[in-house]
Amino acid sequence: MKTYAIAAIPGDGIGTEVVAAGIEVLVAIAKRDGGFAFKIDHFDWGGEYCKKHGRMMPENGRDQIRKHDAILFGSAGHPDIPDHITLWGLRLAICQPFDQYANVRPTRVLPGITSPLRNVNGGELDWVIVRENSEGEYAGVGGRVHQGSPLEAATDVAMFTRAGVERIMRFAFRLARSRPRKLLTVVTKSNAQRHAMVMWDEIATQIAAEFRDVTWDKMLVDAMTMRMVMRPETIDTVVATNLHADILSDLAAALAGSLGIAPTANLNPERTFPSMFEPIHGSAFDIMGKGVANPIGTFWSAVMMLDHLGEKNAADRLMKAIERVTADKRFHTPDLGGKARTADVTAGVVDAIQGANT
Ligand code: ATP
Image 1 (cartoon, rainbow, N blue to C red):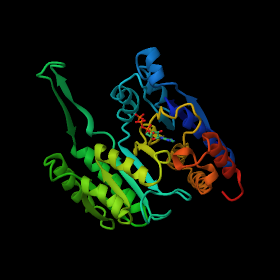
Image 2 (cartoon, helix red, strand yellow):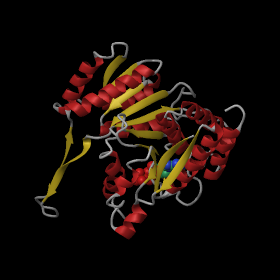
Image 3 (cartoon, protein in one colour):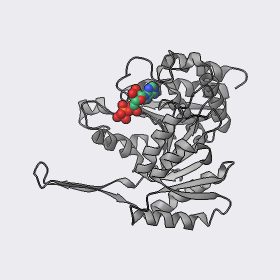
């Protein structure tokens, strides 16, 4: 029997709660499937670890997880540590060296969930946002001089390479082609950002020639926010830069009912390194330790992990189990207006996995 080695990095805040729930569900789905198993290794890296050891993960941390088949990540952050330290010290310290350049973020209104959009019911919103995850505005290029003096200056340079843009465009066109509507929107800001964003547009046009069966259009990022709210049914697959897609996907998550539901995959499509799966939300310290975090975003991330591992039947079965649970309002956590606890939702999904019809 195939055994997948999973590196679990729960991180901080509700990350620890939702990853524990995610592991319960993964173990249940493997048992139900019977064709594969998981070996789960736990890593206590994150803000708490940093307070003890002075860094978010050990110096050889990446070597410890390099050979794993996938990574299940929660969220890292600490009220006492600046966000840019926690982000660059762990999440980006894994994503960038492991070349997880395609960040894929599906958005759907799941059964039983109410979208804040008027006239949108389940099934009418089915998007997948592809975020360039290795360069652009989050390339880390820039600097700060004369700190504290009136002459202080700082730059964050958005860096785009032809190779980086070509590979994310190809990934997005390929993904759009694999979906029924074969529709891609390339998000840009090439009116104001007249160098790199113009190159982004030109490369989109060039790559589009390789995918003549995909219908595509271009949209300025500001106009895109409006289209997501006013004409959501016209959108299918979306590709955008690191910063633009970061913002658009939080909007997408909110439009689909809650940040607690949205999943994401940080993919290294060439499979040279492990890919990483995580809910979109952060550490949510306001609800930490209360047992009310919505674990659905982590469960959906587990579906993406199963898909990536090639376990299509298990992925479909888990998604069905999730949808059966969201359809039942007794399993709605407070972010969805309900009273359920993390443990109730987890037990509900495990039950649904074991049920005859999933
Ligand atoms: P970070 O800085 O780590 O990203 P944050 O608090 O800025 O954290 P989130 O953690 O994403 O951002 O939380 C934003 C809001 O959404 C919070 O009020 C939080 O309680 C709520 N929230 C986020 N995730 C969940 C979840 N899984 N279940 C319930 N509520 C959630």
